[in-house]
Image (cartoon, rainbow, N blue to C red; front, side):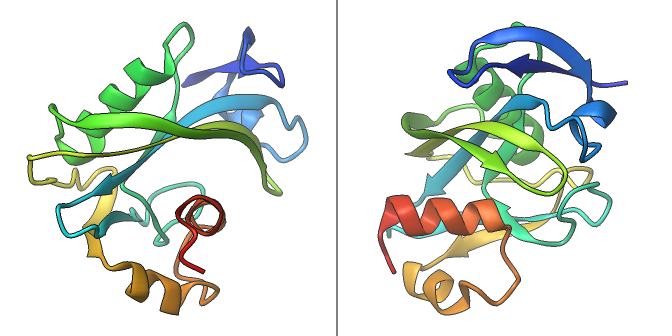
Length: 164
């Protein structure tokens, strides 16, 4: 059973709870996650297609890296762990772009959203990710609203990268 930290509205850990409770659609316990927007030298954005086995948003295109933090883990530690687990990235540059609270019908997340670059070629972990590739801003913009992306990726892309 996976355990998530539960945080207050400022991101401070206050207790822990099981994943199934955090994702049950009724507790709406606020739990922290990290997102990473990976850019290449052409300015293209790497997106991952979520594995069909994921409990939330299977088969949707999403940020290059996204995952839940563990109790006691810093956002940067979680980002490094998730980047290794999902894309095999060990060496990458990153900076925090925004923090926000995301709410869906099933959960509430305190999101730490980062962007950066790496000289390494992403290698998807098939247990976590179905596929991945770099997309141009124009290609993403043309497909926004079509239902192929996760809603929180669309929010971050629209609000932070200002392509729309």
